Length: 252
Image (tube, rainbow, N blue to C red; front, side, top):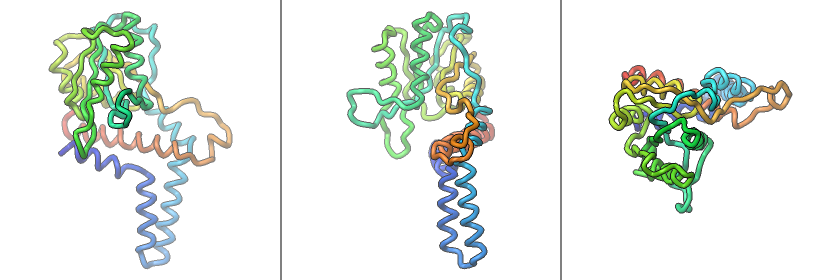
């Protein structure tokens, strides 16, 4: 039930959905003043949430600071890579289709080859709500092996469907007192780290695939609305609500 609710809430957290619903309501309401207010609110939401300066600034504040490879002095027993970074149900099926989160597995492989990781554990089953879907952890394991990681050093957990289950199922596979390095998106790291600490696993963090970045004070970056800004806000809102709901559920 929690998994299903999280998917529905994700849809409702989109500012674009809010603007559309308000616009639809404005055509249903009979009062002219209320119609004007709803349409003005719809336009205001779009202007605010498509502003690139505000969206990037908020994302920069939220994302966890990056780490350089050279700052990792020890060899971790496990590099834990959270899935959710490919499109496993997209044809053709003879290859892996990465999305922006590909840095998670790529950086883990690089650190393995630099001697900073002893094993790589790839976590994640199907996150599809309406059908079983393909288990992308298997495809990511094949990719790691193709990149030169020995098969005996690649582990898979393919049943978890969300961050809470990622942590809970990992704790069963990893021996106590193992030193682990956690790979996930910078915007998601706070929630992921909290879930893993809740299980008692000793994890350090290696945030990846940043959505923020330098802010250029030019008219294009300050004033011109961008659809990408809506995406940033949707990510942030989902993550903030996720943290609150996880705390209520006792996952953090």
